[in-house]
Length: 174
Image (cartoon, rainbow, N blue to C red):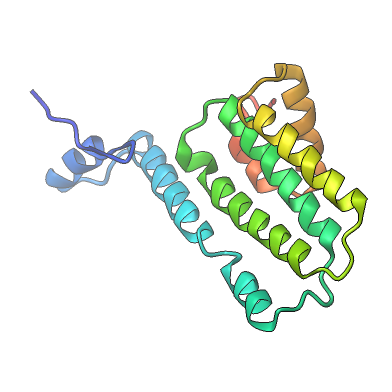
């Protein structure tokens, strides 16, 4: 009986068996393994992507030259992409970076709001609307066709092409 070697959703059994017999693992074994490992590396790296910008803003207590709408759009794009990946029940290695990028982007928007000299009623309404709609999206409480439309818009509008490729089905359709 062969024991399975699995860690973090990655099955190392076939690769380990090949290597113990001094053979190169077959591509059907190696490619999924590499895909998972690279996916988790991307997730790990994404945990610190926006930290330098957050640190600079906190250090300087200034948002001069930064566009609040561009950061708000980034939050919306990451939210839609994350909701779509959750809806598709993809493995964490396929979308995990979105969790950390979204959290860091939300922190940036909060900092921008906090340091902005002029916050209008429109800004607060946008924030309230996001806080009302995001949980509905992330919980998957919309129709599949609406998810596909939102993700298609987000992928084309927010340059989520790399994420689009990772979230698509085998046939390349949403």
